[in-house]
Length: 571
Image 1 (cartoon, rainbow, N blue to C red):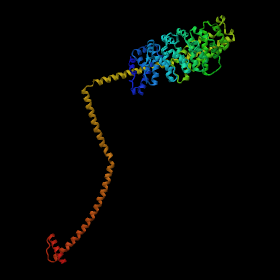
Image 2 (image 1 turned 90 degrees about the horizontal axis):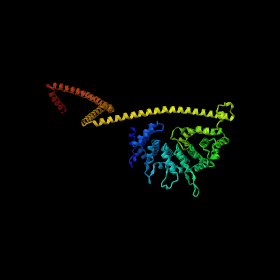
Image 3 (image 1 turned 90 degrees about the vertical axis):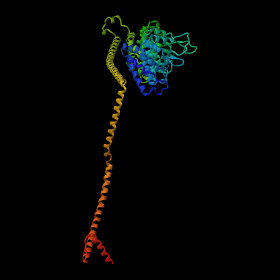
Image 4 (image 1 turned 30 degrees about the vertical axis):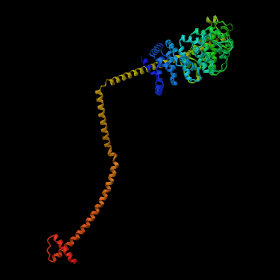
């Protein structure tokens, strides 16, 4: 299984290693976490998710993720995504949920990881996205986990033994009653998940008593939540408490009885549902108050005489009007954040003011909306049931019938939209699965190529290495020779300026030589003239010698005689 090969990638760097969380490692871990979440996302077929979750626990991947959760120095974005990944690895898997419940944080004294995470969730100084991730992780821990739900409620019940450390119940109650609206919302939603599809824990939670003031008698958790709902002026606090009470009272007549026994509960809901404020979020509060009233009517066992089913139904009709009640109720499902919360279990708000509705509450509202409408609607008389025509109905009955028709049309429209959404998501899912298969195939191919290359590298012997080394040296020599030739070919081009300079110098030397040649020619001409003069003198002396009777035989004797004549002349 490829899942088993993912576990070593989550090994923590050794302590003191400054480069342990480099930018590249953070990016790699983030991508691998996305791969893990793709395998266990709630949108996958249940069998596929369950098989992947089982393998992840068996190969140690869940343990590695929990080690990252409890480690120090982990970057915030990696920690947040790891919490989300752990959430989906344990969601709906009892064995993984039990393992997670036993993970201990390395603190003094040691605390369960669940407690440490909840401490971050109710701490308003922690990053908002991190707190949302912790809530999602806690919700996944309680999802279809009756043991975990029971253990949470048990931490709130009276006990003879003194508590020696913080518990999940104490942290949630502290967050529920704090002055931070976000902590109120987170804690109320987290506590409501301990009651989802678990009527036994709803009854157990009725036994929880709180000491509000020293010397004052304890009050029940139900009374305290109702009081906070009536006194609160923060939108998120109200919505969180309304979701908690709606989950608590649904399918639990005993809880409805205790709620109706609080004198101010129904008057407050009636006033809120009948309010005329038209702010978007105020409409949401009014609609949820109407929904809670409808739950009190439908799951009412008539044990509180002043607020029996019929009396509450008449109260709705006389004080609010059935039409207004249905309008207020319909505002919930029309709200923008209802559709966002209903799409997927994990909420993805970009900022705190977008945190209004929870996914499980939206599922509850969708399941009970039609039931609530029927509960507040007066039952028709037998003659109407037996087929009286619309023409014989009264005006109010026709109005009611028209409202039913409008509601049915609206629900049909929503059903069609949801069907289209399902078709689109199915196509997207098919495309994503195809991409995953393609990536898996590519990874397998690359892995095989890598193994082949390693095998080839391991089979190389000494002779092969020598041969390759010799061939590399030959190639290097060839490259060196080619480089030298290239330099020689480039040399004439590079020396063109030197040649031009040389040519200029030679031209200058040629001009000087020509000048000297002209001078030599002139000197030669002068010498020739001088020789001609000397020849004339010699001839003259020859004639004079002959005139004296001297015999002139050759030029040497003649010269001696000429010299003798010159001496006589001088004498």
